[in-house]
Image (tube, rainbow over all chains, first blue to last red; front, top):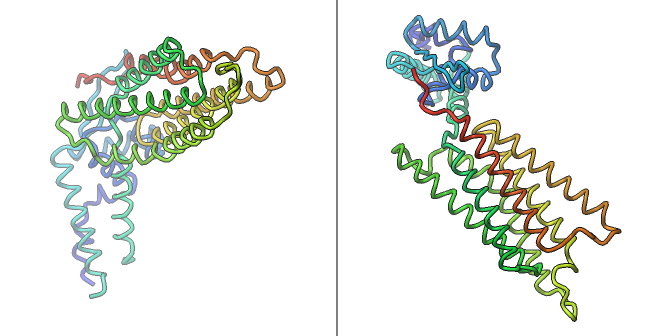
Length: 102
Length: 224
């Protein structure tokens, strides 16, 4: 077995919670903090921590606005985030292909 | 490293991405349209004096088809405006979610239409007063089916839609309870106009109120 693809996996995305956030954002132009929290059944604190980590790496951008006088936080993938996510998926597919019987 | 692990991760990612693709068409115009159609149809039904059971069913089934067709046109217009495909995966999922309950209600209407078309007519004719009870439970059952349909759609779009679905279900149950418990009084309150206005209240005012609520609260291009 070639361990190379596994070693190349982006450790930041590889964590279960952050991978879920990246997956959700990869399929939508943007999602609100509440939508992410409800869909992933995460606590506010947990989600904030993961989003902050992704934001620091430049994978996720966070926009704050107001809707009906209430704060609205919206998250979306940056170009770098989309590229990193695509790379992560490619590596997973490589790993799957390696293990598929010929 | 477990060889299955990568495959499971890919499957999880796929599931999450599918779940993330929410149905984002603005529902306010659709609900307002449906509400206005319901109210206008109730008024028109009274004005046209549609009194017979079969006439009542045929009339409201036609109204339902017109309402659905109008809603599809509104969705298509929104898709064109945002240069997105009309039959997108979220649209398909919402359509699949509402289809079973909506078709069950429609087929029940067709069945009642056949049964009541062949029912003996009183001589002298007494209008709808003979089957006023039936014309109260049928709208109630339609409300139940409709409630189930939009509750199912609520899993792929706004959560408020599930609440509206629940409200339809509760309203349907309440009307059915009233029909059952007032049976021995031969529906003294039941007049043919009341059946039209029951439909107008359930499918008109309720949806119009929800549409107005959405219109005032839906996200309108938040400022970044």
